[in-house]
Amino acid sequence: MRMLFALLIVLTPAPVLAWGGYAHRMTASIAMAALTPEARGEVRRIMAGAARVETPECELASIEDASVWPDCVRALGPRFAFSAPWHYQNINICRAFDIGTKCPDGNCVTAQIPVQLDILSDRRRSPKARAEALAYFVHFMGDMHQPLHVGEKDDLGGNRVLADYGAKDMPRMNLHRIWDSDLAERALTTPPAVAPVRQVAPPLGGDVATQVAGWAEESFAISRELAYPLLGGDAASCVVEAERDVRYRVDEAYIEKTSAAVRQQVQRAGLRTAALLNAALGQNIPDKQD
Image (cartoon, rainbow, N blue to C red; front, top):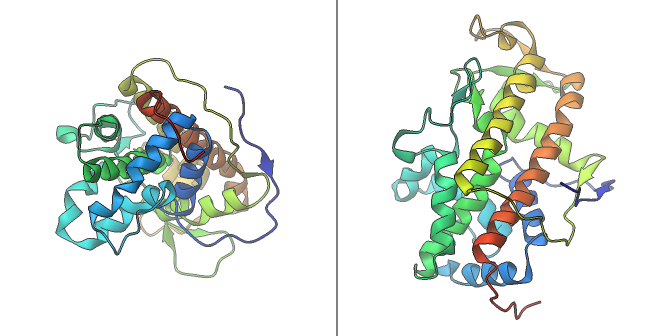
């Protein structure tokens, strides 16, 4: 695939947001820039119906808002509690990759991506249903490209592996949070940083479920080959479980070796999101706002 993104030097600091924030919004911006005019117009029409979702605490006015909306609404109580398992799929990196594991009744990220894509592309569905589905779809595409949302070692995607980050003098964080926030922000806001380019994403071949399985396996491989092994010690082993009282450190060497993977995953997520939306929505609907 031809590289569609300029690598730009970032001269101003960015706000501190997690992969549930900064990287998700970047993924959405990349996707929006890579849509066909027809698909972009339909995305805008879907977002125009987002007010009917009625979540004033969680803004839903743009595709960037949509990319973080599913995380925001999880804090609103039981109304959206059903969606909690849709954000991840805990596939053990010490076993062979199997897309069918840890996904009871389709309640996992890889199963929900095609489900939400079908809903958002169905023009017979209500504006509310389509707006929610667009938000879930864009968000889950980002989640699936975060390696620890797919690969893990029976530790909830690194949530049970405690580590220090860089030279920070603070209580240990968990590995999942580091990949979500500190590592993602560092990778995406320091040279070479990622920026969207207004150029249509190349089309994809094959059915959506097959594509998703392949992309999930890429994330799984990054967990297996980088996220855990670079910690060293028991965290790198499939023979013993990572010790809970060991002081792991995500040092500068770890950050340097993983930052390229973070950038690549965000680029991939944005382009692939656009390609799927182009195929689903780009059906000669005029884009009057372009």
